[in-house]
Amino acid sequence: MSIYHLNYLDFDYSEDTDGIGTFDAMTSTWPEQVAAVQDEIVQVLDWAYTMFVGIRGPLGEGGDWDFDLQGQQEFTAPQHIEYDASARRFSVHIGPVGRPRHTVTLSISGTSGFCAAFRQQFGLDGQT
Image (cartoon, rainbow, N blue to C red; front, side, top):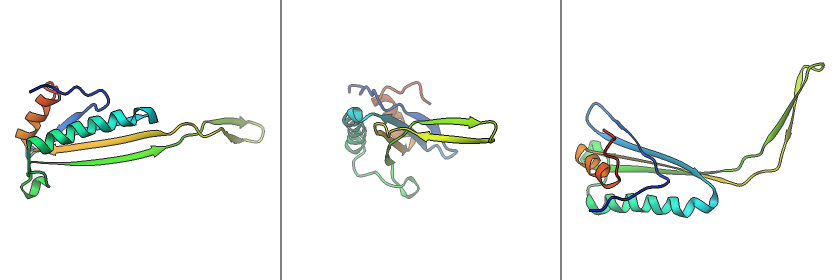
């Protein structure tokens, strides 16, 4: 079994008192990296669906693993802020809207067996 190397998804791990583990990753990229991020998410989810066939679902209802995937696209504009001491007030000048940032969060929760296999598959052995 080869280890998948992830360039955009950097998972943090936490565990609750019942031994359920959660891997959380968030990435924010420019439009030209969106396809690469989506490819990594596909790798992660395809692995989980393939290795743990038919057992995805709420862990409290007998599932071995589950996930939550969220996305957001943001546009920002710079602000030039000045303070007029004599008037005791700010003035704000908004610049042009910049390029969009695409933010994706992926949370995967699982049993101890799922988490151990996930760590091994994605080279996260240092995360316990």
